[in-house]
Structures are given as structure tokens and as C-alpha cells.
Amino acid sequence: MAVKIRLARRGRKKRAMYDVVVADARAPRDGRYIEKIGRYNPNTDPATVELNEDKAFDWVMKGAQPTDTVRAMLSYRGIMLKKHLQIGVNKGAITQEEADKKFDAWLQEKDAKITSRRDQIAKDAAATAKARQDAETKVKEARAEALKQKNTPAQEEAPEAEAEAPEAEQKEESEDKE
Image (cartoon, rainbow, N blue to C red):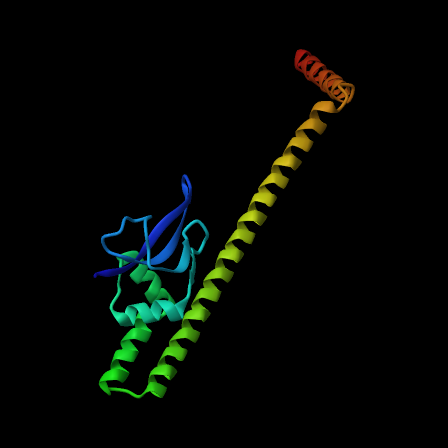
């Protein structure tokens, strides 16, 4: 019997979530499965992957074939690296302690990358919100200024126009005299 580790769809329309399941290759996608080993939510940023890593590792070591998407998730979580190291231990190429050290070092590096990515996403979101706030403030100030200009009394404009008119008349009179 060929066993696959694959995704089983669930969730509502256009908001899909997936269960990571171990199933017979002949079973339908959302049909019968042997064991549920995790969840995958692609709707979040970054995508949320929850796996029971021990069960996933056991199934991979027993020969279950992951689909392409699940293989990427297992690689992301380090299960494929752990399998690679364990095969090296079984063949005698390295010791179990060396394999554990390599895996722990990789895991710490990966966690640092994930944390920095999440921090960067949070910073970008805060910067976008601040830019949007600043743009709204500018628009608000421009509207307030336009409203202030509109509501100023017309009396202030009239004296300016009257002051200009005598100057123009004086110029005309000085030109006539010449």
C-alpha cells in the first residue's frame, strides 16, 4: 500500500485551510485518512504551519511520500533535514550527537530568520499605517485651510479692491497731465 502525506482541504469558500494527513494514495483528497498530523493555513502572512513533528518524522522514516507542497512544509520545519541526518547515522557516516548538534544549529538559525521576517512585516505595517495617517492629516489640513478661506468675510476683500482703484486713478491722472 502506497502511503502519502498530503493536504486535505477544509474551510469555507475562498478561505481554505488544510489538514496535513497521512493517507492511502488511492483514497480521495478529502476522504479517508490514516492519521492527521498537522494543519496549514495559507491565509496568514507568513503562512501558519502547525505540525506534530515527531509523527511526521516517523511517517517519513517509514517511507510515506509527501506531496510537493507538504515536502516544502516539512523542509521548512526541518523534518527532511532530520531524516537526512538520521539516514547518515543509520549508515554510520556520523554519530547521533553530531547529527543532533547540526540539527539544533540549523533550527536556531531558522528561528532567527523567521523572527526577523515577522519583525520586518510588523515594521512595514506600522510604516504604512503612519504614512496613511500623515496623508490623511495633510488632506484634513488642506480642507480646513480651504474652508477658512471660504468663510472669511467679503469685507476684507473690498477695502483692498478700493485701495487699488485710487492708485489706478492717480496713475491715469498723472499720465493725462503729461
